[in-house]
Length: 123
Image 1 (cartoon, rainbow, N blue to C red):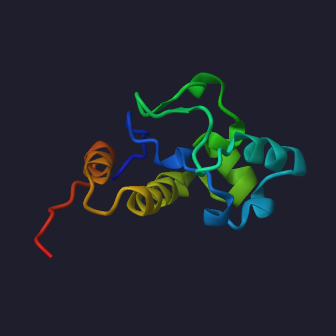
Image 2 (image 1 turned 180 degrees about the vertical axis):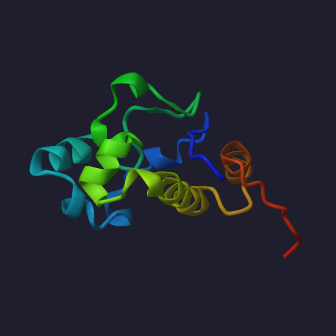
């Protein structure tokens, strides 16, 4: 069974462009939405994303909406604890693919980390 985990130096989730996430109002409170929007820089990346290290500068203190946590996902999205791994893995894959591509090093590292390596075949 695959187990979700964050991979270092990816940062795909730090791309916060609101036009890429049109349903923000569906799962963020008004205060959270205001906080979320305050984090977005003009190019769509989070102001706390360190582009040199490709890591979050406030990882330990990041907002709840930036965390993959069973209670958060149940409350926000109605995802049961048993479904969290599969849901989070698919969300990460989609976001990594959008940002870096489905054949990127980030995608390969993620698939290996979560226990579902892919064989890349020529197109």
